[in-house]
Amino acid sequence: KQEVTQIPAALSVPEGENLVLNCSFTDSAIYNLQWFRQDPGKGLTSLLLIQSSQREQTSGRLNASLDKSSGRSTLYIAASQPGDSATYLCATGGGGADGLTFGKGTHLIIQP
Amino acid sequence: DAGVTQSPTHLIKTRGQQVTLRCSPISGHKSVSWYQQVLGQGPQFIFQYYEKEERGRGNFPDRFSARQFPNYSSELNVNALLLGDSALYLCASSPRGQGVYEQYFGPGTRLTVT
Image (cartoon, rainbow over all chains, first blue to last red; front, side, top):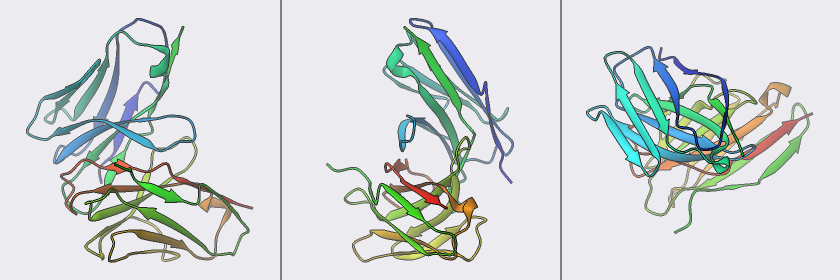
């Protein structure tokens, strides 16, 4: 059974810093990995999707990497802004019909 | 284009009652999945439907059921509600049923069971 762990559980940094969020998974036989953002009480916003054959994906100030062999993914946020404050979730997809497996998320606060 | 929509936004029910939640996928998407998110946890997979058939089921009791309609919208039903069913219920859509494609989530339905 796939297990996804996100470290740290919470992070508070000053505005302008570059930061890295970590995601690890136990079963490397994944089809893809997706990073999401969730604002309090809201749904999930997809940030980046990395297919298993890819090493990284970039969107604006966000860069996500994937190392299947070690069971790890990182989300890099450059030049953080207060509007980046949210919970960030990673999820693995097995390629079948068993849905996504999520971590518990990293609660990020960017101090103005 | 409209994203994934869910109704109602909020719902309060009493233990033992039944509830129906609704989801409309992004236009052109044929797969709908349901997730339960308890406060402080990541979402947990409940069901996936593709082309009106159940394609996957998570570890949830038979009190949970769902269906998908010809227009690809979906309903999630929960019978005999328990306090532990209080959660944010999320619907996600994707173009096809395989787990290859990016999942797009709706705003969720907040269910409170008293």
